Length: 318
Image (cartoon, rainbow, N blue to C red; front, side):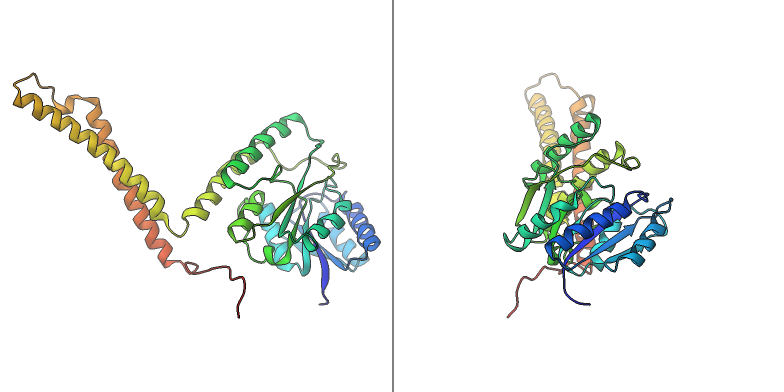
């Protein structure tokens, strides 16, 4: 296959009405800028005629390629398959609902090629979504910035550009598509930029995401941050918490025992240790501390048995 400038990966689910217009729009932009390109449409188990439309577009346009799932696996799975098939030097992702504008592609490409960014994320500064979707999104993005340390305003924007090496070095799974910038940073790609992009009002169909995505998104954020920091050294996390918890419980127990001995030595009234609520709190802390420490130990055993325990991203060789 000849070298391509750009691969456009389009995950889709029940978007039959918008696909012909999207393909025509991408074609127009690419030809106006002289790019060699391909468009990979990944049908994530659509229940409408989306795949039939993709087949028609593939017969009409030589640049259209298609991948179809037997069932709905989610956006992360669609992106992973699209990334695996992509051949372009720069990979652009965009949603199939026409809310992402292909007119942004030339500038995104330029930022990757000329400004040497590894990843450029779109920022829908002006959105045409209802306030019930915008406000939770602002909170979600603020939390993601705080936890990840990546200064992006819109982590979940579907319009992004990547250097080819980036998408071949990361694994997108579960619902981690929201955190591809975080995954890229963990893989060593730290030149992450942002571009304000135009957001279109939805023209066909309805949104495929509900409120549950914000709950899932927060849990996924905790997962990706934890795995990145402690995936290969779980004892550092669980062992530290376990030791601290155990020591707190032990110190409280020692204090109560010491207090009883002091009272007995001075012939003072003694309150039984087992009659004090603090005793049960300290006992619980000791037990939890031991459990956390054992969890870290088991995590270390699992980590050492992993086939990827010595998997590293090598930058250069001589």
